[in-house]
Every structure is written in C-alpha cells, then in structure tokens.
Image 1 (spheres, rainbow, N blue to C red):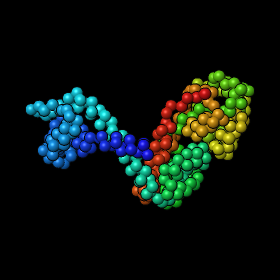
Image 2: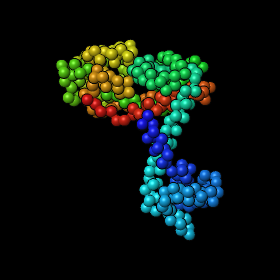
Image 3: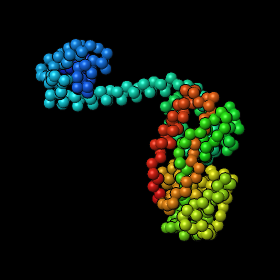
Image 4: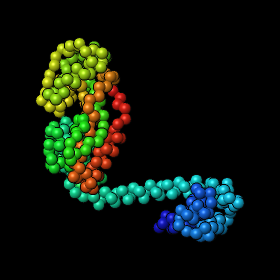
Length: 315
C-alpha cells in the first residue's frame, strides 16, 4: 500500500507532459515556429506550453533571441533527460506494436529446403519463429530438386546458389564457408596442427560434395595431399554425423555445424583457408511472396542468418 502511495506522489510531481513534448520539439528545431510546424499547432500554442512548463519549474528553459531560441543551462540538462525518456518510450511502443502485429499474423508457410539445411540449421532455430508467430503453421519439406520445377508446392525455400526461372526470385541468405572439422576425441588421438597432418586422417565425403576436399586442398596449397583413407556417404547429414562419431575429418559448411561447435561435438583444428562454396539463397514463390505469413518467415530467417554472420573462430 505504501509503495502505491509513493508511486502516486511521484506521478503527481511530473511536469506537464504536453509541455515536455513541445519543449523537446523546440529544442531540436531551435525555434517555436519549427516546433509548431512539426506538431501541427500554432506558434502561439507552442509558446503557451513553454511558458506553462517554465512556470512549473520556476526558471527559464530558453533564451529568446531575434532569430530563434537557445537552451539555458537548466534547459540543456532537462533536454538530456527528456530525450532519453522519449527514446525509451518510442522503443517500448515500437516493440509492443511489433508484438501486436506478430500476434495478428496467421496462415501457413510451406518451406522447402535441403535435408542437411533442415536438420542442421532450420529445425534447431524454428522454435524461435514459432514463439514470435504462434499463429503461423510452418510446413517443412526437403528435396534437392530445383524449386522452379516444384511449381506451386512451396512458398519459400533455401538452396545452394541462385535459382532463376519463371515465378521464382532468389535472394542471398548467407555465405557457405567451409573448413575441416572433426570430433575432439579424434583430434586427441591424431592431432592436426597443419594441413600436412591430414595425410594421417580419414577424409569424409558425401555424394553431393565429392569435389569439395579437392577445392579446399588446392586453396590450402596441398593439391597432391593423399589421405590415409576416404569414406563416402549418401547424404551430407550422414557425413556430418560420421564426423561427430569420430570416423574421420569432414569439410564442413560452417553454418551447418554451428550447433555442433557450440555443444563441443565438433572442432575446427585448422583456421584457414575457408573455402567458399555457393552461397545459401532464399528462393521465393512470387505468387505467394506478398502473403503476410510468408513475409514474416522471410524477415525472420533473414534476420537470424544476418545475426549469425559474424566471423567464425575455429578451435
């Protein structure tokens, strides 16, 4: 009860809020006329609000000059607090308006991605989207086919490299940078201090990435390096899982192994070079690109990809 009473007393000591709004506008413009134009009121009305505010404080906030006004020392100190308060209020209002928008958006988004991208990148992050947009149903499907051949069976997709064709548009999502990666246990058994040490290792491949190691070794200055063994798997998912289980060293897409790195399941023992494969791109069905639910998913996945684009630090 006492705390509520104290809060009420504090509010009773607040200056006229409309006067503060006029004060902040005058301070920014350096004139009553500029503030009046912004606030859609008369010069006289602004002047009245400033006089009321100065009467409330019992001191002048501006020095009147022939070509405008300037803040007094007391006015400058007040402006700093008022500006900070308005900025916080604006941020809170923007946040609440966004939250209200997300609560209103509903619908279905059909997302078609590569299987490796779905398992390693999208699904671990999808709960965040569902928390932001609880009324949007996300239907995830996987295929490596060109999305232009799928027709209207998808709304938005992720592929390696751009896709061109009628009815679709591609937009860059994130870079696909690759480095050797292996389990910490394997690294303890057979340390990798430089590229030459890979000759003692089993190099892991997948059917769709057979040439990746050759590209990387060429950039690393060791195109003739011969590994102890090679092992190939049907899918990238199996290739990465094999690396986690200590079966060899994989050339991994850094966006796909971020979670494994964070959980300590994989490490990248060689810091450079990073080989850049075809970037991940968003492919949008133009017939559905204007749908609110599709736009919400596009904005979300673009935001998350951008936040995770910071330079990668190998271990």
